[in-house]
Image 1 (cartoon, one colour):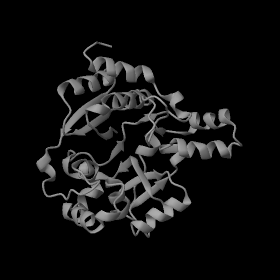
Image 2 (cartoon, helix red, strand yellow):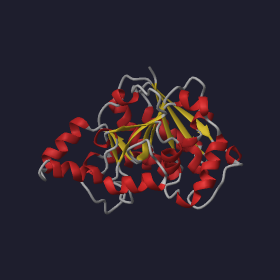
Image 3 (cartoon, helix red, strand yellow):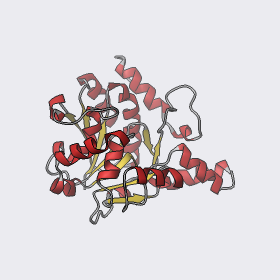
Image 4 (tube, one colour):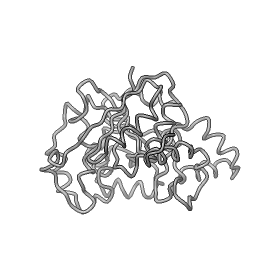
Length: 280
């Protein structure tokens, strides 16, 4: 079965995207993929760089250009921008034959195959993902968004989406009304909308496996008695996706943490070079 991947970005994130894709394809050397790139500003040069990373792999890069008028009736306020709607409207702009898609932020890398995650049985759910927050902040966010049926507040940076089920009930007015009603408390934009609007239809998975960041890794290390090597060994064998969320990015100076040791800087630098007009 083809693995459908969705990414959304502007041109500033092309090198990180290329880096994520290189790790994704390396972890799945024979699995066919369609990589949907939703955007409003990427150029042919940008897509040439992206396709170069995918050369030699059974992967198809599919540009999805989203015009401003696609969201002309959508409310814009505070943190709610047009980009807020890119993930929320995936059931509308993805092809009819797409029944599920895995959204992945460009500031991630894939350490191990995603097959078990991607092929998950949704049941009645429409989203599957993992939380990053501790007990207090999770409880605070669930209270803030009036969530009563889902026990975690999901980080939407890695999100498996049941597109077939979402199409059956998708209504843009429901999204718009939820945003207008709750605009003062939607501090995390579309992530808040996903958590609040789809409460009770979300599968919560282990963040250490599908969406590990430095905060979660700190807990892993503590569970290992502070043994860094043991904690890293657990990551290398049990983590599918590492997420470099927050303000510290491995491709920028001053990174704080340990997980950047897995970041393929060669791919990132090659993508930057190619964008500047020099071949790899």
